[in-house]
Length: 81
Image 1 (tube, rainbow, N blue to C red):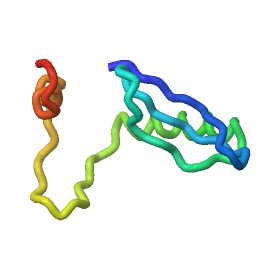
Image 2 (cartoon, rainbow, N blue to C red):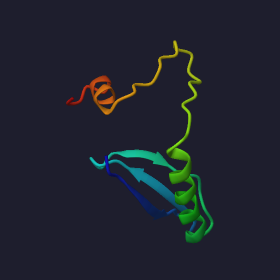
Image 3 (spheres, one colour):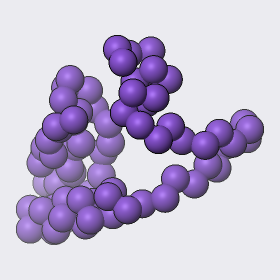
Image 4 (cartoon, helix red, strand yellow):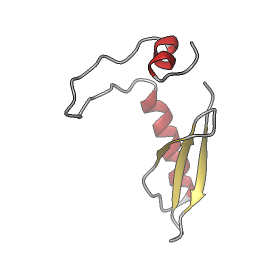
C-alpha cells in the first residue's frame, strides 16, 4: 500500500511531517522540527524504524496478536479481502 509523507509548516514557523495512506487518510503526525532538513531526516528515521518496529500494546484491553497478512488486516478493519 503506497502512501506519502507531507511536510507542512506550523503557525510558529516549525515543521511537521504527516503520514498519509493511499486513501488520503491521516495516519500520523510528527513532532515539531525546527528546520526542513531536520524534518526530512525525521522521515528517513521513520522509514527505517517502521520496517522493523515491534508493536507494544499499552492498552488496558486484552492483548491480541497482530494479524500476519494483508488479508487479515483488511478483514479486521472491515475492508475487502
